[in-house]
Amino acid sequence: MGSTRRRVLQLLGVTALATSAGAALPGPAAADTVGSGRGIPAGGIGMHLYTVRDILAADPLGTLRALAGIGYKCVGVSAFPRSAAEIRDMCREARLNPVILHVGHGDIVGDWAGKVADAKTIGVRWLVLSSFPGDMYTVEGMRLGARQLSDAGAAARELGMGVLHHNHDTEFRVVDGQVLYEILLRETDPHAVGFELDIGWAHRAGADSRRLFDENPKRFPVLHVKDHDGAGHWTDVGAGVVDFPHIFEKADRGGVRYWLVERDDQPAPLDTARNSFAYLDAVRW
Image (cartoon, rainbow, N blue to C red):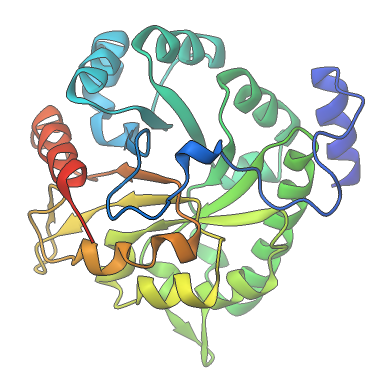
């Protein structure tokens, strides 16, 4: 991955390190962090665009403006079929802050320099691996994945960005006596790799998000805030069985900076956006 780092810098014309060797994952301004209050800070509630993917493809700028009108301040970029420059410009026009870009496994082991260049153009702080290939969900596969994420994160750090891993339920399987997610937590470089915890998938898998925050402090800058009904169906945030206030009590410990709404199905995406924002805007812990 050393050659990839050089290609990243060459591609973007960067000659100096953006962060010092001992720096932690890049973070937002102090105003974005969780302070002594008991609610989500201003600017912290976002929408992961996968939730509105169909209407986004049909009317990207109109969809972004609608999200901003509801009250969202930031977005996670995914399922947005436009160039990096177009995504950047439309987010600016809608006054939405793009904070993450989801990428595929093929990106981190392929043209990583090109993907980092896209992320830099859009203006995100983290590139997020959405999932590993199915055959990697083994002990050795997760160990390999941890090395790949660490190498990719080291290259991204040259430009002041970080790499996160996004989970589904699969990572919480026990294989050969080991929880796969624990391998990623243990074997990734904490200076280069963090985690975007998908609360809904973790909850469905029986994982304890509070414990993850407690045992891995400051490694979870971004959440996917997702809810379900306990019977295998997704719901709008706050309409299901997940006890979000209980989880959010540990948000500061986990280092959470952005709470991104996501719902995998799309029965009424703008209704989901409105209902979920109203819940997160009012939630206290």
